[in-house]
Length: 434
Ligand code: NDP
Ligand code: HSE
Image 1 (cartoon, helix red, strand yellow):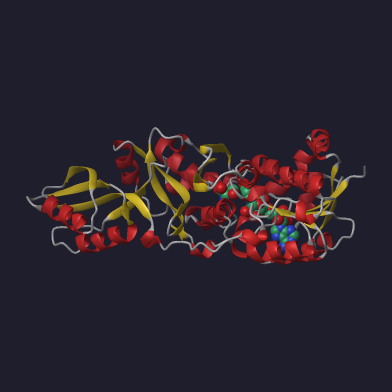
Image 2 (cartoon, rainbow, N blue to C red):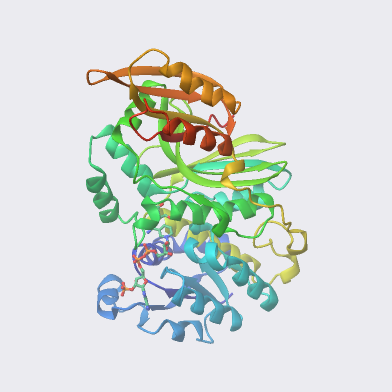
């Protein structure tokens, strides 16, 4: 059978990896796909640089629209990134009747509903395994492996850069800036690393996971997003002392009132599986009502792991290309007419346990007053410890039992107004994920 023809948009970290693996593992991949997968053309900005990478063996152009409109191309692989040019290119590829593979979570989080609708109307596939958790086949696991389940929640370390930074800060004593520079050098970080450190990249991925898990439209704009830039070293240390480790988690949970969709630094038990995920590794826990908890672990970023996921999609598209569109796997796991409109909950309605740290005057009655304000809104303290701070102040750390975030907010507002409270209240969420 003739080879299937691929047009690569981008030959950077991921595009370069895809090119390399399609060559080194060509035979094994063809045995799986049933046909050779051949890259016919690639588009980049700097043709000379690309030439140094791939030699003369590949046609290189500097206008990606030429690739998208090339009548010989069957599959367009978008590895440019961003949500303007990439969106135009993907929409044009779809209009041209081409299948699309992308690693671009930012684009799908912002415009996924529109892109999947256009692809459905045109009868082409759009696949995105590499967009979530790099080399881990989590999209396929949720979309195909767990279809018997009503999924209860998904929680994971889904940004390699921030996990790398937190690991380096805790284990190697590196500063935040040093660790971020290393993550950039290693090719983990986004073109704009703010997306990583402010939790935006994780929220992009989480909104895709929520759609796959619960059959809701992609709703990145409703995700609560808090990154790691305001985390203090002392909170990492206090968490350890309490038997926890701080990780940037994406959590989406189905509750009777709606769906939680949130990314934030989280204390997880130090002996839990997520706590042991180090460096740029990712891990995703999925709890289904039938299967119980399942864990997926692997490299979440970098050229080779991401190429692995892109090529898995290429093989899937190659295998299913001739299938009737109605018999292909739905883009977001659920049949289009079975998607539902369960609301995404406001953060005030999220339920979690909390870590609270504040500095107070060290005198009788202070603890009792704080405990009273928490109790007034039904919040119960699980544990606490106190450390002297200077001559007549103390730092108090509380762990609460589960509470509604809106109740914590109103208690903290009142606590911050007490005359003997000498600092803001640091608040981190705590999850046991059982
Ligand atoms: P890079 O910046 O390394 O590569 C981008 C590529 O796109 C380069 O080859 C660049 O060309 C090309 N490009 C950019 N703009 C244009 C343009 N206007 N016309 C033609 N070519 C263009 O990015 P990555 O490979 O790291 O990321 C690509 C995508 O994969 C992003 O969506 C990212 O979020 C996603 N992703 C990345 C992961 C990673 O570990 N890096 C992991 C998972 C997903 P030139 O080289 O000439 O500048
Ligand atoms: N910047 C991303 C990360 C790349 O650090 O996880 C993988 O999506």
